[in-house]
Amino acid sequence: MDPMSVLRTMWRHKRYVLPAVLITVIAAAYVFQFGPRYYQSSMSYALVNPIIPTDAQMELNPSLKKLNSDNPYLRASNPTLITDVVVSRLNAGNTADAIAARGLSSDFKVEKDPGGNGFVIVITGVGTSPSRSLDVTEALSAMLLDDLRTVQKVNGADDTYMYSALLVATPSRATEQFSSRLRSVISILLAGLVLIFGAVSLGRWVESSRIRRMDASPPQVDGMSTGPAKKRGFRKQSES
Image (cartoon, rainbow, N blue to C red; front, side, top):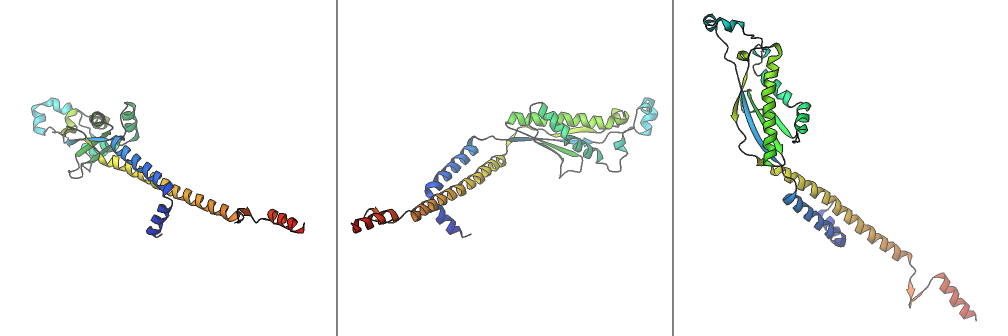
């Protein structure tokens, strides 16, 4: 479709198009300025290997031999298995349900740090205000620590033989996600585009209806119709 032809059509029906354009611009400006805003904050943890007692230490302290060392993640061929398990548990649906039950946003992200060595977990919480974003991040942090302990305690392993979580970065503040506002504005603009094309269709329908009415009406001669009824009237006058 020729863009110039589209513009000419829109200009021809500007009586209907301009209000639609005005509504779209006002709605987009309102959403960008006053629409809901979203903030995100991040926190990261590094999973640290346990310090396993050596044979010499056990000889000096026999009580160490009585500790339960049955932590399955210490025997895994993949050393980062513990990280994968914790991330998977936090991304499960029940985590989102638990966050939502607290009145917080279930919009969050838990993933391994792509630039790390596989033992760093990054938590990102999203909220409609900086404080609510921080609340989501802190709630996920507590769940991470709880899940980390739960999965390693499956066989009752002693704390000495368990991975621990070392806080790497704290969420000092939440930053606004401008992309969320832009997505809202884009949605309004797309809806406005549909409204504008609807206005063009309305203008074309009104124009075609007017043309059909003009074609259907009989021609006028000196202010009088030349339709069949008038012609019969002229014939009777001439006969008289």
